[in-house]
Image 1 (cartoon, rainbow, N blue to C red):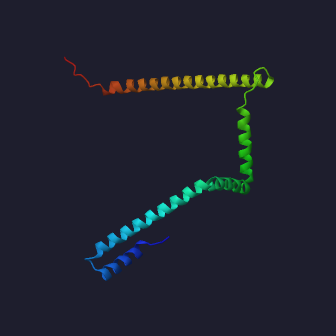
Image 2: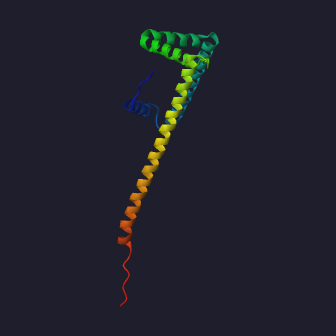
Image 3: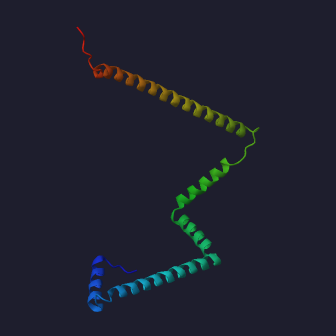
Length: 158
């Protein structure tokens, strides 16, 4: 709305100081602040009233429908991909007959997927266990090297 920078605000403040005077300047700023608060409150109330009226008349739903159709018109590939994704999702959500060939194949694939996941998890756990054992061995080697050097020499008795 208004684009006031620091330089403009400084000039307005200096002019207000000269015209109004330093004695009445705080009163003027308080009145301006109250006026701005009332104006913002009225603008907020008007905006909420317009939104409520739009909700009551159904304009918001119509606006969303219009926005989605404009999106589809401006990006036909994206809207086509959305359609394909929704169709694929609806196909995966279908309950398959377990006695049909498709149902048997789906069950076999699900079982194979579980086996693959279990094998992958087992391999990862074994790898982590092996890495931990190697790290422990290295730590013990370092301790063995550091321990004799760090041990204080005891004086020998003759």
